[in-house]
Structures are given as C-alpha cells and as structure tokens.
Length: 287
Image (cartoon, rainbow, N blue to C red; front, side, top):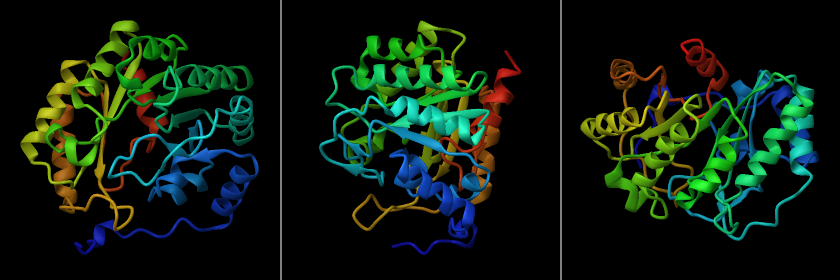
C-alpha cells in the first residue's frame, strides 16, 4: 500500500458541532453521503452547518469497488423522508442543498419519483433554497431522468467517476457512455439546467485519458467539473495507484477552464459536492 503524502494529511472530523450534527442526523433517521462515504471534508462542512443528504437509505444495489457505501438489499422507501429532510434543511437555514442517493436498481424508476418528492418538500418548507441533485444513472432510462429534470433542480450532477478504460475494474455495473449520455439528455430535456460531473484520479488513469473525459463532457455541454484524489476506503476496495501531486490538479483545473467548463474545482480533497453552492453561484451568474 502506498504511503499517504503530506498534502493528504488532514485533521479528523471531530468537535462539538460535528458530533452534534451526526447525532441529530441519526435521531432523525437521515443519512449523509459525508458519513457513509467517509468524506475527508466532513469536519469542515459540518462545522459550517452544511451537509450532502443521502436519500433512499444507506444500502446500494451496486458494488462499485471505489465506494464506501454499503452494498446489499435496500429497505423499502420511507414516505416520511422528504418532509423530515426538508425540516432539517430548514433548521440548518441552508441556502443551497445537495441531495444524492444510493443506486436503487430494485425500483422501477430508479428512485426518480422519490427525488422529486424530496425536491418538492424542500421547495415547500424552504423557499429560495438552491437544490443540486447528484443522481445515479437510472440504468439509462430517459423517462426517469425527465421526471427529475422537470422538478427543476438548479444543478443536475452525475459523476462519470473515472476514465472509460477503468470501468470494468472500478465500476463494473456502470457504463461510461451511458453516464455521458445522461448529461447530454439533461440538456436536451431542459437546456437551462446546469449540469455537473466529477472525476477521481489516482486510479491508474493517464493524463491523456483525463483530457479525453474532459472533451467528452464538454461535447455534451457539461457546465461544472470536479476532480479529486481517490482515497481507498478499506483494504477490500480498489487500491490507490498514485497520489497525484497538487501541481497536477492545478494543471487539470487550468485545462478544464481552457476547454470551456464554467466552473471547476480541482484539488486533492475535492469531492463532488464540495463547495457546491459556491460553484453554482459562479456558473449561474454567467447565464
């Protein structure tokens, strides 16, 4: 196993605010991807009263080799979740909220209608709050994607995660072309939707392959790109092949901006939802 470099050493997410938020989420039966995916930014975000909500349970029907979220047979959907989540958003007085989910291949629409119920509940209880949804691929279903787009989230995020060559070993149950097509369809359905995608590096990809993914995303008019270092959640997950130097992240950021992305976040600790509200404001001001 590679030794973690100095630039990837970060304090543990501890403290009174973090502990209180974690306990409160548990009491309310709510999940965050911050906790489930062991995000290194959890302490920073929780201390600001910010979280990315994970809906439809904490068990995924897929088993991607990079992901810390549990895989197995999910529970039935909880019809009270949308109102409970909206209540928490209101309590935290958030101006911008990110809503993601486990992949639910067991549901006929992949959970698209549940996304809509959550969006609508947040709109009712928290007028003016910006909403980003980070959606699964819905197995390529255009009707499922349309259901979510028609609920008018400010940002539609779907991560390609890695380069096409690595999909069989990193995301064996997903399809790169299908993910890119989802982002294209989002714009086809509603051209004013801001689209976003994310990449992990350090999985064995080449610089050229990252450039190619950027081109593919710009070809479908993707607005925002996030790039961060892959960190292996456990010894059973896909190994880290390389700890990418911060200078390379700056190079990727500059190249992404040159290629036309309106918003870019690229550094070792960047995750898909990191500073999502700031990126949204940056990009929305250009429309």
